[in-house]
Structure formats: structure tokens, C-alpha cells
Amino acid sequence: MEATTHHLVDAVQSAIQVASGLAIAYAFSVVGAILILLIGYVIAGLAERSVFAGLGRIRGVDQTLRIFLSKVLRYAILILVGVTVLAQFGVQTASIIATLGAAHFGNGAGDRPVRDAAQDLGRALCDGAQQPALEHRGDQLLAQSETPRRMRDPYHL
Image (cartoon, rainbow, N blue to C red; front, side):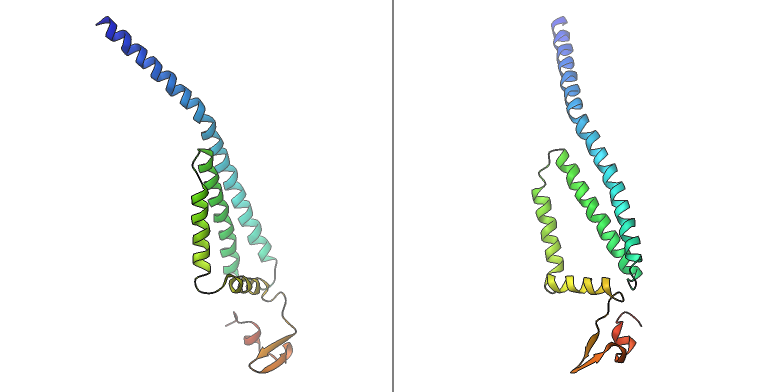
């Protein structure tokens, strides 16, 4: 009976040593992950506020577009922070990044080429900031002063 108790105590002591070794090994990973999350969260918030304020200084940028673009940037940063935290724990992140890339191109390129989407975004950002000197209406080329307001500003109702 004494031999069994001795083996049980040895087994418990070795289990405690293994557990404490694992706790020490992963403690640095956990602390690093928490720091990455906190810093990433703060940076995402700062980036969101600065993009929102920066777009607010551009004349003609719609409030909805400002909110949308600032939120997209915030969540893109948070996704990158999440992937970085997973990498901190040793998770292979290549497949996660490939999936995110495929989702991005599948969502944006399904209806029209990415180039057209980027041009539309550029036009929306610059709407009101820079208007072309000449505009087309059907077959006619009109000077900007001749173009009715509803044609110059498609977002104006």
C-alpha cells in the first residue's frame, strides 16, 4: 500500500511539473496575444477615427461613405490582428489568409471587374471635390455650367 501511495505522489509531482512547464511556456504566448489584441484594438480605433475625420475634410464626401470606409478599415485591421494572434499560438494562418483573399475577390469581382469597382470608389471619394470641365450627355459634350445640377451630382436627389 505504501508503494502505491509513493507512485501516486510521484505521478502527481511529475504532472505538476509538466503542467507548470506548459503554463510557463504558454504564458508568454498568452501575454503576447493579449498585448497584440489591445494594441491592435487601439490602432484600429485610431485608424477608424482618423479616416472618418480625414474624409470629413474632403468636400462632397457622403456621410454614409465616410462611415462605411472607416468601418471597413477598422474591421480589416481587427481581422489582421486576429490572424496575428492565431499565429502567435502556432496556428497555420496561410489557409485563413487565402480564404479571406478568395472571399474578397469572389465578392467584388463577381458582378464586374475590380477595376470598375475601384473607379466607382474613386469617383465617390472625389465627388464634389473635382468636377471635370466637360461632361457627356448622350452625343453632346457640354460645358459644366451648361449641365443641370442633377446630372453633375448623381447623389443629389
